[in-house]
Length: 96
Image 1 (cartoon, rainbow, N blue to C red):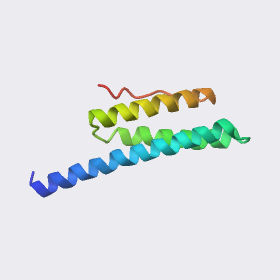
Image 2: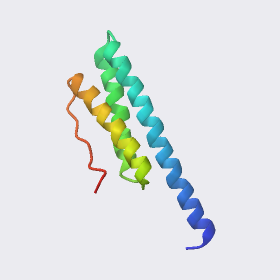
Image 3: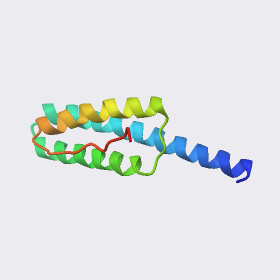
Image 4: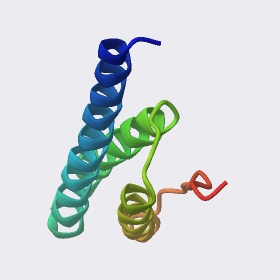
């Protein structure tokens, strides 16, 4: 693999991880809105969509130990928020 391709691939992965972190922050915002919303169902649907998008992109990203720790913490918070809204979720084991 030549240097430019390797650097581009690493940059692409960093962008995927940044996207995952941003999407997690959006999902946390949706969770906070859902907890205070009068239209809890719509907010919960938006939260679930964001959560599912994060899980999808996690399956194609390579995480550093630091990124992994941050993402696991945010996913745990989101799982609690989803469960409080009555939405069943499973968290992918990121430590394997």
